[in-house]
Length: 99
Image (tube, rainbow, N blue to C red; front, side, top):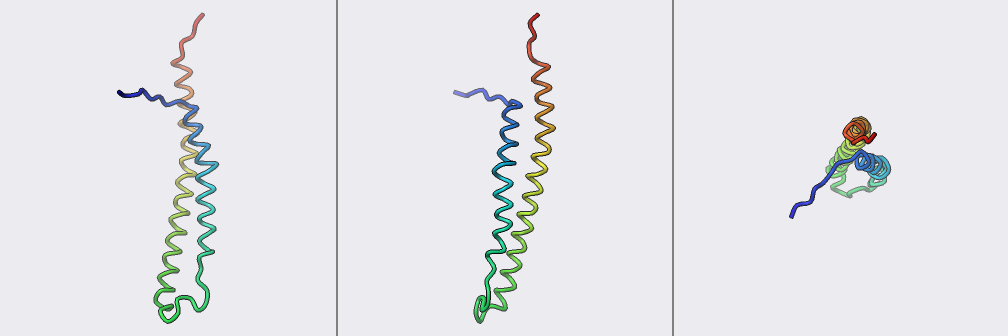
């Protein structure tokens, strides 16, 4: 048996708030934590020259990915504001008015 599901401006607002209050701070924390994963001297020992460079490259890749993720989620939060306003306007226009 299927269940009807409805999108509301309130639901959109909740998604927006969760992205802003939970997802963005977690991604920003991850970005800051990358620096704490540095491997100090003597690093990887004898293989340090090879692994050290690769490890730094991976750290930089993860920094870039988290920066991209933060930018994307920030754009979603902004877009959801427009979507929420439009959805609320549609809800209000489709409401039955009794006189």
